[in-house]
Amino acid sequence: DARTLGALQDSSRMFAALDTAANVVRASVDLAVHGPQPLEAGAALRSEHERAFGPRLPWAEGTHWETQFTHLVGYGAGYYAYLWCTAISNQLWDAHFAADPLSPAAGAALRDGLLAPGNARDAKELVGGLLGDGWAPSARGVLSAVGDADK
Image (cartoon, rainbow, N blue to C red; front, top):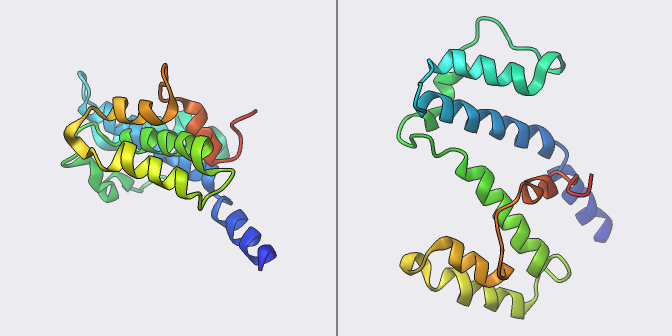
């Protein structure tokens, strides 16, 4: 029923802000480790964690979380792409699906304008075709995932 669906949607957003903050930390660490003046992963992680969370979520001494961050190997400063993908997908959702998630017209526009051309055209051009001229990725898209885009 609608109440159960609403509760499920609410629960899926319960920790969205913490998830987003953790992804920002991971992206910052990835860029610090692979940047022009690379830092050691553990030092970078601690620095970014403390900058992002401060005393609200203190660093756990003696841990080595970077050993579980497998994206540090093989992605090479690309982890931030997850944040861009979140921003873009939320902007697409807001523009085409928020009012009617099952809209055949919106689904066809996404299929024809983004999925069908695939890698044959520039990604920014494809997304721009769906979001309009002058489109640019926005932090607002990331914030809408946590419910604070208007704050």
